[in-house]
Length: 306
Image 1 (cartoon, rainbow, N blue to C red):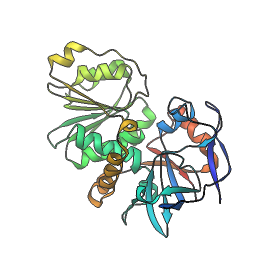
Image 2 (cartoon, rainbow, N blue to C red; image 1 turned 90 degrees about the vertical axis):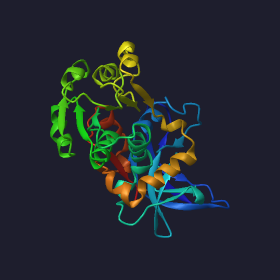
Image 3 (cartoon, helix red, strand yellow; image 1 turned 180 degrees about the horizontal axis):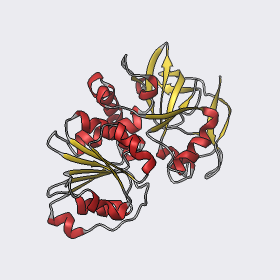
Image 4 (tube, rainbow, N blue to C red; image 1 turned 60 degrees about the horizontal axis):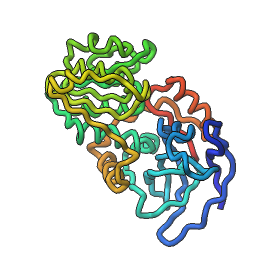
C-alpha cells in the first residue's frame, strides 16, 4: 500500500514529498485516510534535528492531524502523520465529535491541548484574573486568548508586529500591546497582570516577572525569542510568584490523549477557537516552514493531505 508523505531525509534540509510504502496493518491497527495536519514549531525543530535527532532517516514527520476510518473523523497524535494515509493503532484514535470542523480539529492535538491545559490546569484562570498573552498572534497564543476570553477574564495580547496588531484585536482581546521585550513591563503596568502566558522566552520572561502582580502566575511553554534569559529573582520571590513550565513532549501519551478528548468535547471545543492562517497543499510544506522561520504566520498553518 502506498501513500504520499513529507519525509525528512537529512537534518536542516528541505523535506521531500514523494511516494512511500506503508507497512501492512497488524492486529489492532487500521489504515487512516488523512485529511489535514497542523504545522507546529515542534515539527520545525524536529526537521532541524533538535528533537528526536537520534532517530533513523529517512522518516515521515508531523505531530498531529485528522483523518477518516470507515467515514468517521478521528484525531491522531504522535509522529509520522504528514502523509496521505497512515497505519495507526486503533485504540490511539480520538473520535472527533460532530460539529467540530476537520481543519480546526487538526490543531487540537498539540496547540489546542497546550492552550487548554495551560489555561485551565496550570494557571487555573478565573474571571477575576487579568491575563497577558505574549505572542498572541501565534498558533497557541491565539487559542489561549479565546479560552481566557470565554472564561470571562480580562485579556491583553502582545505582539511585536504592527501588522499583526489588528489581527490580534480581532481575536477579542481587551487591549493589544505592540512592543519588544525591553518595553514590556512598562507597557503593561496598567494591567498589572495576575497571569502571563509566555511562548517567547528570551528577554520577555524576565520582563514578565517584573510585570506580574503579587502572587501572580507565569506559564512558559516556548522559547521562540531565545532559550536563555535573565530572571529578576528578587521580584520572583519577593512578589510570591509561581512559575510553571509546560513541556508537552515529556507528558505521558495517555494524559495528552485524555486532554485531547476533553478539548474536543462540545463545550471546550466551543471555547477553543483555532485561528487558521492558511490551508496549504502537502507539496508546499517547505514553504510553510519558511513562513514559520520568518514569523509570518497568524494563528495556524494547516496542511491539506487529501
